[in-house]
Image 1 (cartoon, rainbow, N blue to C red):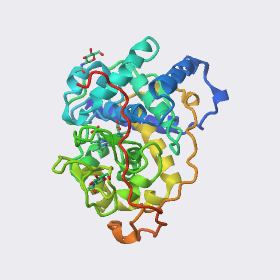
Image 2 (image 1 turned 60 degrees about the vertical axis):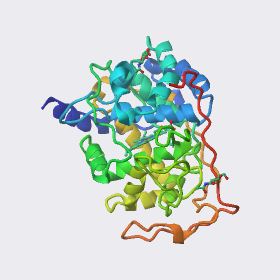
Image 3 (image 1 turned 45 degrees about the horizontal axis):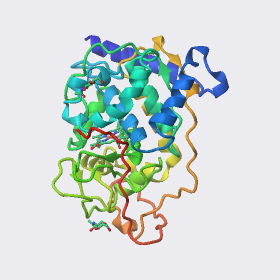
Image 4 (image 1 turned 120 degrees about the horizontal axis):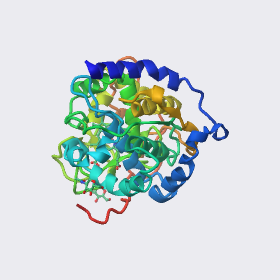
Length: 357
Ligand code: HEM
Ligand SMILES: *[C@@H]1O[C@H](CO)[C@@H](O)[C@H](O)[C@H]1NC(C)=O
Ligand SMILES: *[C@@H]1O[C@H](CO)[C@@H](O)[C@H](O)[C@H]1NC(C)=O
């Protein structure tokens, strides 16, 4: 079947690109130079030089565009179809909330649409979004995606109420191992939800949503006892920190025997998750693409600020006894406890989206 062929061609071609040494700015390929002013525009004017709502949205967008491919039903992967066929794809329930992201990102895409295809623009903006977030990896960026030919088929984007099995199978069908899936979920360290509980838009998934650290992996393993807003929302379970929202999917993958030890390992190993996430994001950005037709423009992506003074810790008032031990082979390590009263994490300030539809 044609899609299967495309996918295996991709997997075979991948190591060639992945094997490139990460380039320094001085190694800039002249064919990538036009990206330098576009990067500056996005960093300053779309992201406001912050790891905030606009950067989080651009990061989510790379996933929702790229995952639209399957060996059985087709789809173009990281092809920009979510921009061009927005009428179709934004109606998918799993894409709830992306209308606001496209409202923010869309004008920049249109401004640069003579220079970049939709697929390249989305993956470029996503790679740049990470450059705003302290502790994030510098991800590679390859240029050369052709314009999308059709909308993604429905039901390819995972939902937060999907079972761990369904999520792992969805990712496996496009070549991602359980360990890679968990590394990708470190994105939820710099993320929040607008639509899961619509009464509290901008509710972060961990206590530090503007920093790429490992708190998401620690906090999601704590025994949940509160809803930050209303109860009974589909895809949400109780969290352990006021002001943070726990996705059911994150909760299940943290506790599932196939993934719990990766989750636990990442809780205290920032360097490991940073590296694996960077590799997995780049691999995801090539879904459905023919890497032989692409060029490495990684040198345009700035190095994100380093994570300073981060010590994996339990939140104030909680300790090892609050951890729901889920990895069968290794005990969750004892960590220092942050001082102070129980946290109340503020919402993520929302990028203004004038129309509010
Ligand atoms: C198991 C698969 C996944 C599920 C079920 C899932 C689910 C969700 C949900 C429900 C939201 C909140 C949307 C809203 O209400 O506004 C969200 C936000 C987000 N997700 Fe995921 N996600 C998954 C994987 C990923 C991956 C692989 C990435 C990597 C790029 C990612 C990046 C993000 C980001 C950055 C946000 C925050 C968006 C914002 O704050 O505006 N997610 N995710
Ligand atoms: C799709 O994008 C076009 C062009 O930006 C916009 O006018 C239209 O309102 C969008 N449709 C949806 C459903 O978001
Ligand atoms: C969370 O904190 C707010 C503000 O201090 C408080 O009003 C609310 O009751 C707390 N919610 C829970 C579930 O503890």
